[in-house]
Every structure is written in C-alpha cells, then in structure tokens.
Length: 68
View 1: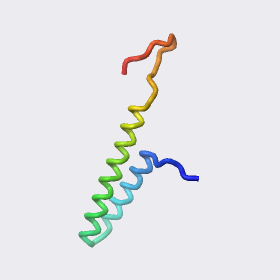
View 2: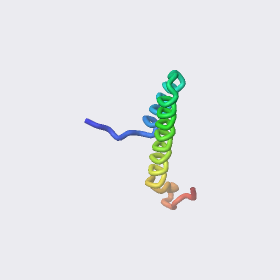
View 3: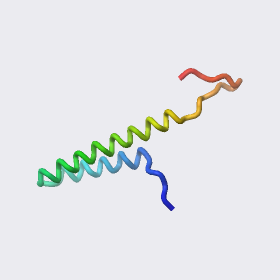
View 4: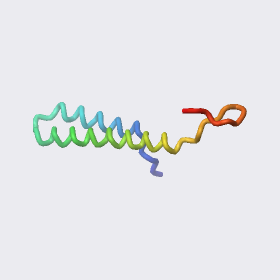
C-alpha cells in the first residue's frame, strides 16, 4: 500500500541530493542534484502550507474559536 509523501520525506530527499552533490566531481550532475534539492524543499514547504490551510480551527473548551 502506498502512503502519501510527507514534508519530512521531501526534506530527507533534499538532504540526500545535497549530500550526493557535494561528493560528485561532475559539475552538471552537481547542478542537477542541487536543483533537485531545491525542488524537494519547495515541495516540503508547499505540503506544509496546505496542511496549515486545511487544519481545523482550534477551539476553546467553551466552544469559542481561538485567534491564531
């Protein structure tokens, strides 16, 4: 069964790309890996924004909504 990719998964992939880019001597490969790292970070940020936008409104114990 497939699971949804999380922002943590995206950040881990970004880190893998960055670390691999540091180890390669091929400039084109390094540039591609660094571009991929940026894209993974952007995807993580997008997932985080969507989670924030879709989060339920917090409420106080008496049922009133909180300000956030």
